[in-house]
View (cartoon, rainbow, N blue to C red):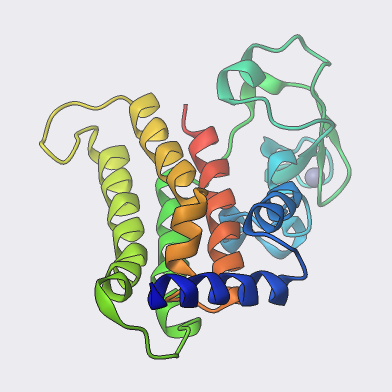
Length: 227
Ligand SMILES: [Zn+2]
């Protein structure tokens, strides 16, 4: 009884810290935010870093550069095959170095592999317990369960990286890319449950909890790119 009361009090305290009246409201507000930062940015040259990840594409610049360059799409990347098959002229890519506009969409690509993006994201998430530990002493079975959540998320991402690189699942059976993407999306969905948020709130600071939600949004973006 006491613990339930305490938990409710903690939840309210945490919600207050965010300026929202309920977990659900906070959750909705966070979800509605767009996060331009993509993992891919970690590997990008400086000239391409301020462009939103969904507009980034690599072209062979036939302008002043005459080399491979990152370019900005006129509208968001629709997925690999749709971009390749789009009618000439529907997509235009402007070289971020010299401004040359390319229309040969069947030649464009993105070098940053999903596996690399996942690896970078996982390193960020793995560091969260140190960076955002709630610090306060927590009691009971719930506390250790809460602390297991970050390592569990990292393990699932590791499995996905492995599957992307080998084409095999954890039982060494063939796995399709769409299945890997679905697995990651299920993970993201699970972390958006109020019960999950309540649980990690006992292990991470409010900032840590919102960072985790941001990382999960990034994970969703990466999963959506796995085709
Ligand atoms: Zn150029």
